[in-house]
Every structure is written in structure tokens, then in C-alpha cells.
Length: 345
Ligand SMILES: Cc1cc2nc3c(=O)[nH]c(=O)nc-3n(C[C@H](O)[C@H](O)[C@H](O)COP(=O)(O)OP(=O)(O)OC[C@H]3O[C@@H](n4cnc5c(N)ncnc54)[C@H](O)[C@@H]3O)c2cc1C
Image 1 (tube, rainbow, N blue to C red):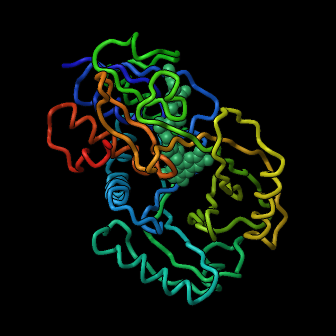
Image 2: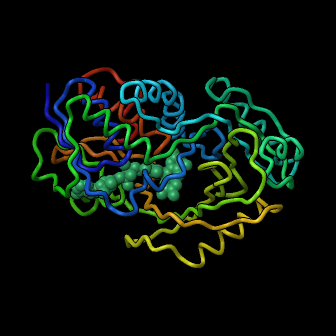
């Protein structure tokens, strides 16, 4: 049994701590609940196969992340008796016209062979989009990916925390420096990493999501995740309630005050995607997304012996659980499924 101190209780730290505690190590998580924590502000979409990003190291990580999700969630929910609000209702990916839809269909379905967890991939006509998601605009054709899903970051963290405590770990709500920790230090401080460690260089983006209510008839059942045009996406958060986002703002500051311009922009986008029904804005949530210089997560030891995991970027909820599994295996001296060298630049 070894002793681990984990600084940061977002998905990176909580998942690593959970997997280490499960392997009977002595684990303490320190989390100071910074406002703007990315994990609880996240939209929680788990659908990495539709991205146009070509980086193979990134894709291997998120592909394995999406593959691990169902098994990880089942075990966590059974162990804790808590729901993580994970659901797989598929993803509707909208495209500007039929030509782009066809190209996207070919690109996305080509990934099916190596990713059976994607399930069925098929083209949807504008009418079929409307049938599947009655509130949504019928302006765009789509590609449907059956395996797409979503999770609530906050519910996931609550379950992980309970899971860690039930495995005799500790979770302390306090600020701490790596210098003051016992045992092996794992530094997973998200956007705040530079306070105590300069390597790797972590920068962050402010990202805003507009939460809204729609005053229309309730659709039958839960709606799929919607991947809109460009960076826009929509997730259902409760019956007739949705979150739409996101904005991307490189910044040095840590303010989480919503901006009026972003509210107007996101409200305009909501009207574009839900054109037939009145929209009631509820609130804006703001999160600080951590990135490294090549937008790949950093996973590895630094020269001073600290183990750092950071820069999970815009797919951190997707890869967080599998990073926890892999890092715990690595620190236990066991074989990992992914080559962690790929993420230690
Ligand atoms: C608006 C938004 C939407 C997103 N949507 C998606 C999505 O749809 N799908 C997806 O896969 N990913 C998504 N992401 C990305 C994902 O949320 C992040 O990559 C991930 O949550 C980062 O997790 P983390 O643990 O590294 O950092 P965080 O979740 O930010 O956690 C870091 C924690 O460390 C704590 N901390 C820092 N320093 C100290 C210290 N010295 N002592 C104690 N505690 C400390 C902080 O208080 C904080 O709680 C989204 C992110 C945002 C912001």
C-alpha cells in the first residue's frame, strides 16, 4: 500500500484518486472548490468520433475514454448507489447542406470499424431530425450517432467522492501546495496549475453555457445531444430545459462573471436552433478549460518528482475516467492499455 496526495478534485484528480483507492492505496484528495472549476461547468458530451481533429494520440485517448464509460459508470453507480446522470440517447450532428452531410457521414462512419461503441451511424433528413428532436429547427440535415451520450459533471464528482470515501480514502476541502503533501503527489489543478508549478505550461479558456427553458410541448422521452454548426452544441439538462454553448475565450484572468455580449450571442444561437418556441433564459454558467500548448493532455512525472495530469481541454469529461484507470495502473507498476509516453512531452 502506498500513500498518494492528489491536489485538485475535478475529473482528473477524482478519477485518479478513485482508481487508486480501489486498488487499496491510501489516498487523500485536496480540493478548494474554485469557482469556474471546469468539471462542474462542463456540458458533459461523450461523443468524440464526430470531431474533425486529426491528432492520433488525442483520438486514441478519447476513443478509449468513450469505450470505458459504460463499464466505469455501471461499477461506480453500483458501488455508491448514486446516479451520475449518464445517458446514451445518441447524438444528432447537424450540417449546412446535403453535400456536407454526405462528406461528414463518410468521415464519421469510417471510424466505426475501430470504434464499435459508436453503434449505428446514419444520415437523417431534415424531417427525421424534427421527428427525433421536436423542438429543433428543421433547417439542417444531420448524421445520427447512436453511441453518443452525456453526463453531468457535478453528479459524477459527487459519486466519485463517495466512491473514494467508501474505499477508505479522504477528501479535504482545502488549498494545499505540493510541498506540504505526504507520499506521491499528483497535481491535477486544472486552470490554476501555474500557482504552484510552471511545467507543463497550462493556459485556460473561459467558456460560457446558456441554460434555458423552452415553453413548448414535452417531447416523448429524452432528446439526443445536438452537435450544431461550428462549435455550437446543445444538451438537455431536464425536461424542456437545455444548455447551449459554448464560447471560447483565451484569457489570463479567473473571472467567472458572465458577459452580456456572450449572453446575447448564445441567446441568438438558441433562437436559431429552437425557432418555433419561446425561450426563457435561466442562467449562464462559466467554466475555465485547461489546455497545454499542443492541446493534448499532459500525463507524467516532472523533474521534481510530482506527477502531473492537466490540459484535458474540451474533451476532459470524455477522457477523465480512462486517464484515472491508466494512471492508477501505471503508478501500481501494471501494464497500461494506452501508451502514456504519448502524453509526456
Ligand atoms: C463550459 C465547458 C464545457 C465543456 N464541455 C465538455 C464536453 O461536452 N465534453 C467533454 O468531454 N469535456 C468538456 N469540457 C472539458 C472538461 O470539463 C475539462 O477538460 C475537465 O473538466 C478538466 O478537469 P480538471 O480536473 O483538469 O480541472 P477542473 O475540473 O477545473 O478541476 C481542478 C480543481 O483543482 C482545484 N485546485 C486547484 N489548485 C488547487 C490547490 N492548490 N489546492 C486544492 N485544490 C486546488 C480547483 O479548485 C478545481 O476544483 C467542458 C469544459 C467547459 C468549461
